[in-house]
Amino acid sequence: MATGGAADFVEAFLEATKCDLDSPVTSNYGRKIVEYRDKAQVMADTLDGDTASLVRVRKAAKELHETTLLLQRQERELAAATREVAEYRAARAVDDSESEVGAALLKFSMLISELALLTTGLTRNVHNHLVHPMDVLLKDDFRSKMDLKKSVDKAVKDYETRFGKIERDVRLQNKMSGYTRSALSHSELSEQLSKERTCVQYELCKFLLTVGAIEDKKGPDLLRHFIDFFRSQE
Image (cartoon, rainbow, N blue to C red):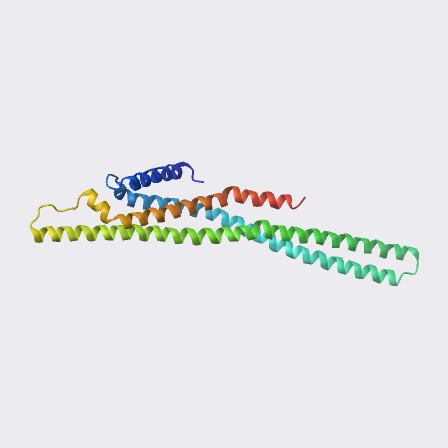
């Protein structure tokens, strides 16, 4: 969900787009297109700052996952080694004392095995609720944001290119015809640039929707993953 200045931009953009769709002849949407592109860039840069912090979270989660994997293997190895010692002591026991030592070691081996099972569960939960969601979030965040920002830039460039071509054509035609008017009227420009302007609106809408979805993933959705992780430990 957009906040602060981003929310103001979204509100202003939607209002201007509605006015343009309702009455393209009287709207001044074309004059704001470059401004909208620049504000979209600011939003993308802000997301980059958030992403840097999330990369640190993912790195820490992956290191925790690797640590619990190693701990899990070590606990299983310790349980197996302790069981071997217990079985060896039981096999060579010559009195009750030796037998009791072997039996006690066997119980500790079983306890360590149970501890390894708990660590296995922790390892699985770290991966399922932290590592994997963070991988998906950062991968989708980068790809979708970059692709859509490029689409916005292209749509704006197409608009500017078309606008420049129309202006050159008008000047040339007027010069050849002896007209003194050097530019098209606002209504004429609106009509001839309708397709390009609509493309800009469409790409900006997609960009803003994606940014909103990414912000949700970095806020409420991320919080839910942490809640699920700690609940899974109960």
